[in-house]
Length: 632
Ligand SMILES: NC(=O)CC[C@H](N)C(=O)O
Image 1 (spheres, helix red, strand yellow):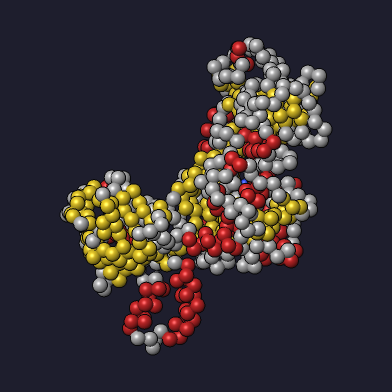
Image 2 (cartoon, rainbow, N blue to C red; image 1 turned 180 degrees about the horizontal axis):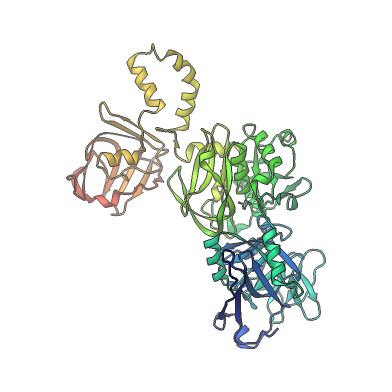
């Protein structure tokens, strides 16, 4: 290897294009001269690992020349691209990547080293890693900087040693790297790994054609045709990959996330909940986060019988993430089925897909899936967008789900189902990773739902539940189901008023509050989006809006509005009059008595609060989350 070379070329050739009768060979050369920021281009340092020529042959006939810095030999797998900028250690150790080559779209990998805290499993299960450029140097992470520059080989699972460029390197698990040659301090990943690959070009191909099967080989004795044949005869669909990554017997988990994760009140040291976690390839950070949320966790193998779980009398059951096709593991779906309704259950990723199937729904394979740390998801309960970390190739088809199962989250990139819930069955699930390390942490609070208390809280106070026709609180829903049998017998005999109440509870109004306001030509952000429910009686135009607590919003025009837990008013075209329960700040807090739009097309909104004051209508166009305040 010549690591001191100032320029290296990446050669891409394509044989046997999949859809072409004529074989084509073409070559693309691109220089990585300016890409290497890590010292390789200075000519001063050598890579402290051994490299070998490698080929990545894709099933579409393209062949990508590369340098292997990992295991030697030949490996087949499905190639998926991951758009995360950080977190490569967590990705490499995520068991959900079993059977897959992870191609990182971020060109520069390795620059933050590795550390003990970021391991997601005790072994790397991925088929291989494909990257553009591996850092020779890496910056020790905060906290590692003061470690002595010595070479130590710790017996057991960890090594600490120095690379030839005098940076402390900590290989946390012996399976990551083996000591290639202890005297010259060369280390080598035990999984297949290759760099100097034109990852952008392959990503474009995967986006166009979908995920492709590939073969990575360092063996010169194997011909391109042989490798291509291998890629075309292997498949990942229908294969049970979970049994290869799950633990073999139950164990207790106690480790929590460190102090840098204390960005919310995790319920730490308050109450202890017993949780059984099914290990379909569970990421350790799920366990660490659950422990931080006050859970005492027993991890059980994927084949653990549901009856045994129930004997353990858990407060909640978690179905974890895991690799491969959810329809290839019917035994897991059966266990999930038996537990639904018996105990609160929460599913993450594979767990979510298994829940979908257990409920009678279907899963399907996506074109190239979602793999990255920047996926926008809308939480349909509160309208908020969460940025999430995702890693999946399959999804639940929401159309196939039975009535009573609510789609709670939607991926905003493609509209796919990203979360499910049923308050009746006490189940919730997310297609993505609320525990994501290094983040984003937007969805972290979702982990608290794994217990009954957490789930109750989530299902009632997370705002409102959308029934098919009306926004009703959970309490109202329960009341309806309690009395619905009686009412269906009595409905012919009840007097008009009772009928009206029944109809109202049952759900005559058909829209959300923002839609109602819009229909009356009022800006839909006049009320917080985290309202609990609302009632509107068309016969006398009375509107009552319920809020979970007294709260406040600062609008775009810097005006501040405060709301009581119940706001009443008379709604008519362009006007909300006789308002009770709303205040605005005009030096002091003043009760709002009416709000009206100047004229149909006007962008002015008039507030009557002591005096009549004009405000810009645009500032109230989007419903916002209100912040809880102590008093109205
Ligand atoms: N992270 C996961 O749990 C992955 C789920 C499933 N194996 C998929 O690819 O869709």
